[in-house]
Length: 352
Image 1 (spheres, helix red, strand yellow):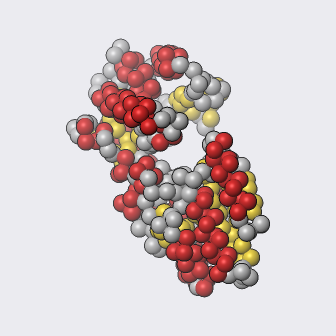
Image 2 (cartoon, one colour):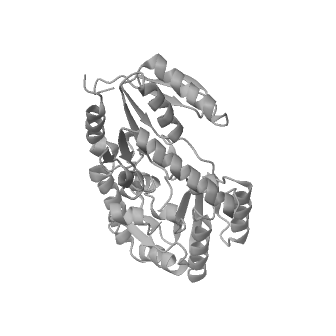
Image 3 (cartoon, one colour):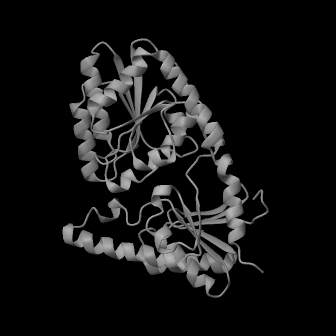
């Protein structure tokens, strides 16, 4: 809006029609409807709004935008923020059907890459396969840095003989909640007199995840556990204000390894030291040694060592907290990259 654009957002995940911060929002709760209905809905919105550029986050949106673009010359910008197909899309199939659907979804991804005119990649490691199959299409790397106005700074100083350890996100095995609990058990055995509080903000995706998480809770020797449901991103950082260290110990599968978790930047913005799985997506993008540690998610002993480094050296903890906040303000917030996004979209517009 500040750049003189008229902007409209269309979503298929909720029922809403109105204006938020001068941006039109038209949303329908039809995620479970057929592909045909979804495409027709997107087309209806496009025909009424008559955009010059459409930024799409899903293949079906690209297909609808391309259909609209046959009647009016527009740019179709495909914003690739998630793997397609993702592991969750295939997890309910048997081995053979997993292979068949994986190939099918991969071909769909190539098709929408062909239909798109421009690419936005959320991280360097998500450039495959589209940047390689379509090397001459204009592209930009645009990470998921949050806007500073949605971050509540909450730097802490460690108190003697107590610590609050925080996990947020999906409460599943592949996202590392079990690794989190196992590392805490090692720490508990080493320091039986340490007052440990566990703060968990998240939810289980499936019944299987619920059973897995319940088992982790039952096994935990730490009973001071505060579990909170997910909240809106505007209030997310307020929910873990009392945390001392924030964790993400997701497994080293292909999808996780090539991801750059957005939570990392929220943790940094609040001034929380982090202990993260040593994902390729993180290592290729940034150096976290000034405000945390990258670890093997299953190496509980090493993770406990990292926590003890903070316990034994409060000055190191304070230094990491200050550096996390400083790096967020200087390098990893939306203001830093917003101009490059605006220029990219301006350049994508069809020339009159």
